[in-house]
Image 1 (cartoon, rainbow, N blue to C red):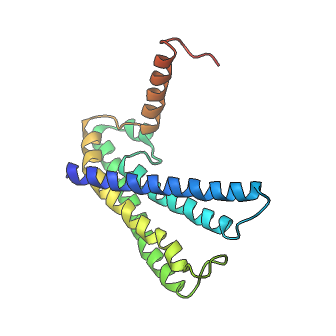
Image 2 (cartoon, rainbow, N blue to C red):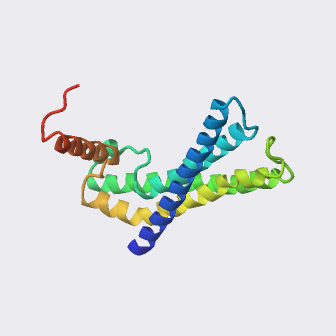
Image 3 (cartoon, rainbow, N blue to C red):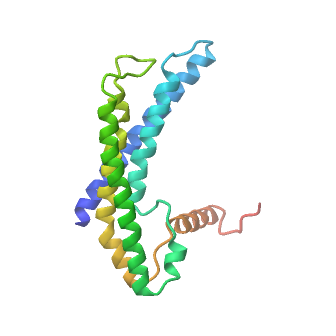
Amino acid sequence: MKSIRLIYDRVLEAIAVIMIVTVTGIVTVGFVYRGLGESVAWYDEVASVALAWLTYYAGALAALRGAHIGFAGFVNSLPANWRVAAAAFASAVTIFFFGLLTVVGIKVVGILQGDTLVSLPWVPLQLTESVIPIAGALFVIAELLRLPELLAEAKRGPLTDHELASALEHAKETASLNGGQEIKS
């Protein structure tokens, strides 16, 4: 199971990197053209779509890594058996929500048949909006792959607060760069 999760993590990470590069490229093209006094008719529409895609796909990666919005502090304040139940309930709600998003997203994509982007009439809206059901399914898979580890962690002790852990890691790196000296603001 860990190897499947690792492969899935790498695939989502690659998609996120590709999307970051794509958004950066689109914004750079728009910036250069505007700097030259020109404009690209498709820039705003395509940049918005690309940013939405980045958000959805990177969100699935964050879910897999347990770095999405959560209430680790609240869950950690609960006794062990309640911690496990709260973690399971939170995952069940997340899976339900993104499962529903996937189903509704498929319906929305079907409704959009024949519609296209305004600035690029050869690009179907079904393509641009396909991110909704695809990302919904990716989120469900991420939650299911993460669930066994999450429940084991909740059973062992307090859940890791990924935002706090990231902030502490950044502080340690910064302190080591400054020769261990305290940072003054």
